[in-house]
Length: 172
Image (tube, rainbow, N blue to C red; front, side):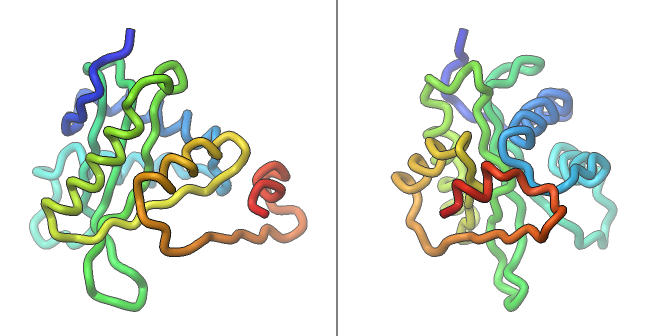
């Protein structure tokens, strides 16, 4: 059964389910090797901001989820960052994912709207994007409907790189 399409702030008890959904997304469009300790570090900072030491200027963010603890159906993850050429802060999307079993729901629309709401609440512009392949074309169409397009992304993998051929072929 699909949960109502309502985003709540993730809690520490959601950690394993966030990982499960992240790995589902990574399997669909990850293009670099996975560094679990790096992912875990950022998830922990967002789930437990009270444990970040004073003076620590590292990444901050928030994770929104749909579904009860132990049975998440969707996740959205934004962090505060900045472009390499500016000190102006922005919200950066890390992931928006609806579990494959719940993609016929309204969850994706609600997760994207939640990101836009975070932009309004914080006053920070939102940067969101998709590394697309044949599995993510529907997500690309959804983003085009819900967010203004400001650019494109290109990727070149040298001979011997681990970039899937399907990804390279779909980027044209």
